[in-house]
Image (tube, rainbow, N blue to C red; front, side, top):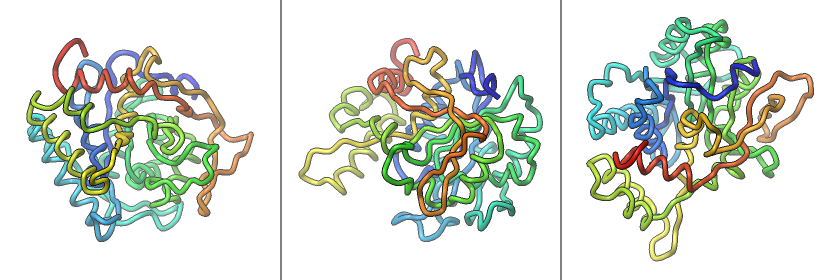
Length: 304
């Protein structure tokens, strides 16, 4: 287990599970992954469900995310990957035993069987973790063939665990935290919430570099002006951190430690059992180093 939790050495195969239409940080994360072919081989992309003011129900959020994934692929000149984009769950897990079948969950369950503990498939998950939990319920044996890198939940010392990705489907999170699969958690409030940027910074480093960069900057600034008109603002681009962990072989962009896996509770807090299996917990982000790597890769300038 501890060996499986090591950062990828050399090239790694990755699938991305993302609620791409929910917030602009998902598009940044997908773009970062697409611009890192020297380290990461992107094998498939799964559209995750979500509900907020942008989506009437989980299925609507998933469909909009699927369309947004295709849009980003086109802007990045990667339209040929469309055949590797799969629609995910249309609803959340109702309990911890029954999967929600979907093309995404079924692809992950099937695809992961081609890997091994020595050569795992890395699953970067940056939304509600329904698709991943469903794959584990469909094929429990894949738990030893994957490493799950999930951006979800809040820091363990945060007053609550009512974070967006976690609270949408606590049952799915309990499946993932409890199944014994190698897991890396990047908590939101209290850890990756430090990974923020501003309009002037984005414009300086990315505007005018390419169509994808212009889209990312334009969407970020437009959204911020909608909720912070006439006020200073900064924006967390936190989903990028999951991809950053995969790229950070030397451990200079973020710090993590080995911990016993907590138990997410339905009342939005964690409980702890000293007999639980091990996982990795990211506790610090070097904001400047990570943004430096992100900007270089997205703009195509300098050594990535």
